[in-house]
Length: 73
Image (cartoon, rainbow, N blue to C red):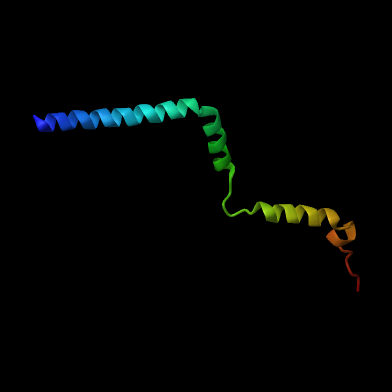
C-alpha cells in the first residue's frame, strides 16, 4: 500500500513540474523565441569587439593603404 502511495506522489510531482514548465514556456514565448534565435545566430569563436575594430580601421584607411600600387621593375 505504501508503494502505491509513493508512486502516486511521484506521478503528481512530475505532472506538476511538466505543467509548470509548460506554463513558463507559454507565458514567456516571445522572449524565449528571441533568445533562442539569438543563440542560433551566435558564433562563440567570433569576438564582436574585433569586428568593430576591423570596421573602423578599414574606414580610416585610404585607397592607397587598402590597394597599394604594384611595383614595376
